[in-house]
Image 1 (cartoon, rainbow, N blue to C red):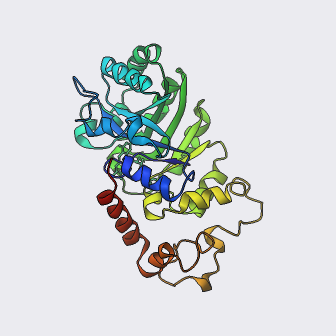
Image 2 (cartoon, protein in one colour; image 1 turned 135 degrees about the vertical axis):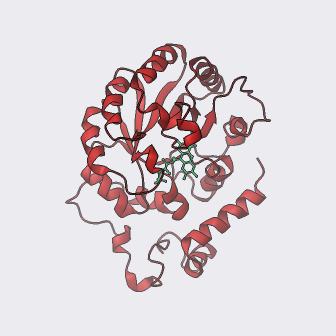
Image 3 (cartoon, protein in one colour; image 1 turned 45 degrees about the vertical axis):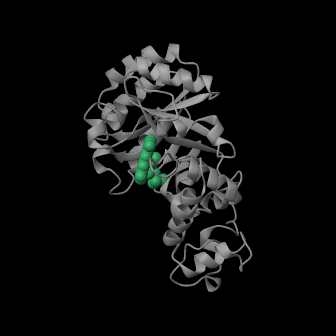
Length: 305
Ligand SMILES: Cc1cc2nc3c(=O)[nH]c(=O)nc-3n(C[C@H](O)[C@H](O)[C@H](O)COP(=O)(O)O)c2cc1C
């Protein structure tokens, strides 16, 4: 499972804290984007740069930095600087739906412009010293944009394509369009990572059973909502892809409901911790969202980068 980039949330403080609490549960994180700007300085004055400096990431979840922007020269400069820092991969953000971003043909604003993407890839691929992966949506305004983008992406040696099956104009409303995702999936020749609205083992199971071609899952809000989700996914990993296999004793659907306080059916399963542990008690007393926010703010206030 890959941790989704979430600007303002999954920066290094969160990643280090999470790794301390649940070592190895998340095998990779794409970090929140570094926005390309003219004269982007690789100095500690820049918080986006600080976030990916190796010395700040000791003890953190392994990271693939992400770049937002479309200026090839600056992209190459930043990507190769990341290579100098020891990174072997970089992710290109083609999914950010903010209007101020898309209006400049950045993020999801690139989705209606496959020719522009081809020109950028033609320039940057031969000149960068790390593997490039991309994170896309189905389109900015129409789902057919992805059908014109995929042949372009297929022409380049990408490490993976992460697809969040919403349109940019939806922002985060509505539900992921799994029908279109299913039609696009066999057209992509790169490993495909699914991203969107996975908040439980059952959600993950639904995606992996319906789309066995999916290579990995990227989860964002689900990890904040339910910090133990990656552990549960790992524990059930061997049972998830096989619809006919016996259900895992650890998945949501099988936690004996009699042991769970009725309003909080998304509680941490008791097999993870002693039932008397502070963490578990916390989840018993407060709804998970409140607990998660309290834990996060505690660490943000107490852990120094
Ligand atoms: C607060 C917030 C910040 C985000 N920042 C980024 C970002 O920096 N780069 C990116 O590619 N996606 C970003 N996203 C999108 C997420 O990576 C992810 O695609 C989206 O939340 C859907 O996945 P989820 O349902 O698992 O959360 C952000 C989303 C949120 C809610």
